[in-house]
Amino acid sequence: MKMRLQAILCAVVLALAFSACNSGRTNKLLVHKKWRVYDVVVPPGSAYDITQINQATDLKRGYYTNVYYQFLDNNLFIATIDNKPDSGKYKLLSDGKIISVTAANGLRSAENLVTVVKLDETHFDMKVKSGEYYFILKTKAE
Image (cartoon, rainbow, N blue to C red; front, side):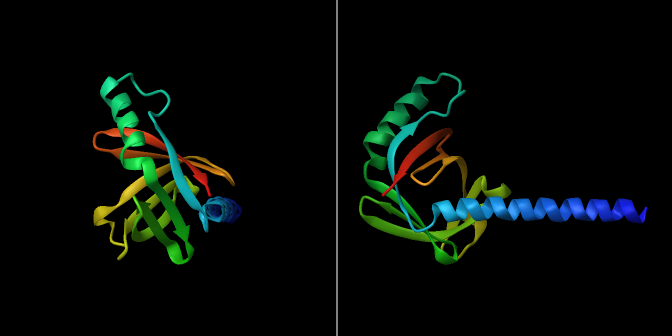
């Protein structure tokens, strides 16, 4: 019984350590870069919906033409839309696969959840919800 308990505790500690490493890797790739939106696409595997496809095109040509995001120290998040910055807080969830973005006070009442689709040194693709549809914002580091 004691051996089994030790094995379970060891597994939990290893899982937590691995989780922290993944979140740390995600954070290291995100921080101190300007992630400029260059494309808005419908997530792969989505059912064909002409309204969603048209909205992706409209968002790319309109709202997201001059948008970038920054993740800074102390979980500070800055979204700059058409040269107007707005700040908030971010927190990594689910081993760094989900990013919770909240108002500057950190309250989750206005939380936006972002799914990390792709993240490397130069590209960050994120799945976001806008209205009733999901879109993938493709960004490049500047």
